[in-house]
Length: 166
Length: 72
Image 1 (spheres, chains in turn red, yellow):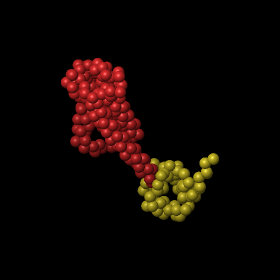
Image 2 (cartoon, rainbow over the protein chains, first blue to last red):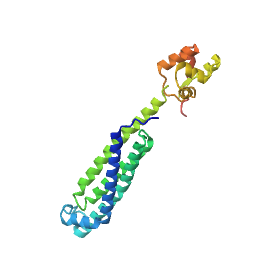
Image 3 (cartoon, each protein chain N blue to C red):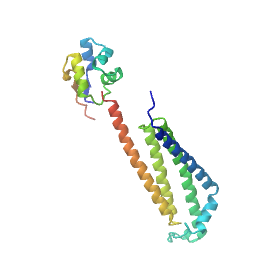
Image 4 (tube, each protein chain N blue to C red):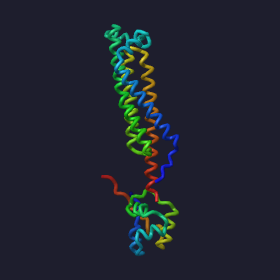
């Protein structure tokens, strides 16, 4: 069968795949130089401000930094599965596999990872209040992906019904 | 499913093969098989019209309602 996919469609998929690779390299660099990066952010007062005073453990600035560092590594760790799921999704789209349950499962994985990042950052916000912003971004992206997944699920059901209409 | 398609019964009565019927009504044998094997979720009026015309029968001869058994 002739492939009628527009060239611009494939170009966008390739561009997004390339962006995934760039993000992967950024994450890898973030993991390698994570400690120095976090120290820079911490001492540059980008993330070292407010904390939850009710927890005595967090009164020590070093303990707060350890919490921040843990959040950073957990978040970057969760970014790898997201990038893997996104690249799988894009490769499926490239193969013209669009309305498929495989894709909705990948989207569920992406949103679950986003929600986990949100959870990690909310916990980390006890040590550094600025992490709330990242938690909100994670929650927002997770919700958007979840909505798209639900729409796609419905579209798959409708397509199945249409396929079985004689 | 409560709606039963008795297409194979009518085809046997009219002594017509699936391939011939599919050609007569202008649908693919695969789609006719979906209809015959109770896998179809919907039937277009135009298809039903063509089947009735080809088999010289009424829609009621092809479609039958059988109530589902209540869950125990």
